Length: 354
Ligand SMILES: C[S@@+](CC[C@H](N)C(=O)[O-])C[C@H]1O[C@@H](n2cnc3c(N)ncnc32)[C@H](O)[C@@H]1O
Ligand code: SF4
Image (cartoon, rainbow, N blue to C red; front, side, top):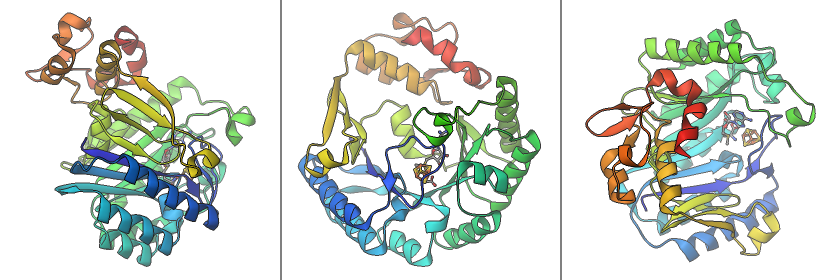
């Protein structure tokens, strides 16, 4: 076990599209939640040296300074970490303050992931994100005084978005000179404001044109498209997310978090009362050889690294090309992988691996 995900399910405001496990910030609830989270980690962490820690949400940066201090000091006193630790915290633009940045630094956090989504005021308003392009520029400049390893989340395929609006968003992103970006096509989920209003998706053709515009512009500017939704400058890939995509094991702590330990994957309850009462795990799934083989494919083929041949053989006991029909895949010395030109239609190919 080399990685741990820690979920903070609170946000200062709720966005129209979001189906993540989250609640509107409430100070008393957050205090109780941190106590329960600490208990869960104490009960389950087995003392391994971790290479990556990722505090995600919800919005971890919505916690106040005292709450963040309590959580981060517990983590640094209790989890053993490697010298080369990648330690990420997710932030919302308007939560960024010099005090919080200093606190993150004090506790050795070395990577920020900031949800920006767009620089365009109409898109931000549609997504119910309460800041402007000028706020983004100011907050990113503060963040860069403390951190170089920063990710920005961008969303595209928002209704009424045009290729010109997206082009402008990418240009604004490039001006910020940030080494990593995650680009997500808007998903309209049932139990969100957008889902309830029966919002329509943009056309598939436009979605594809947007995907290609992002890929072409970022590659021309030195970003490596290393996973369907992720681009980085050399050396800035998300090591934590690569742990998921390589089908490696990891702890998941917190409300609704999932993890993969021993021979099972588990998902924690999304019921806050149950969680506060110490009933953490809601579901466990034993990972059979067949499921494990499928997971190597479904996860690995999202990335340029593909499925490592040796790891597959060591874990599944057979060569990949004996186990699966690999005719859609490309091959190099170490791995079988899906050519980048096929990523956009990946789902239709993955069917063969499930
Ligand atoms: C946990 S949030 C990031 C941190 C913080 N909560 C924020 O929103 O600023 C993770 C990211 O998932 C993406 N996301 C969330 N819901 C989505 C949806 N329905 N469709 C596409 N992307 C989504 C957004 O880009 C968002 O920034
Ligand atoms: S997108 Fe981020 S800030 Fe918005 S509701 Fe979801 S987790 Fe909270």
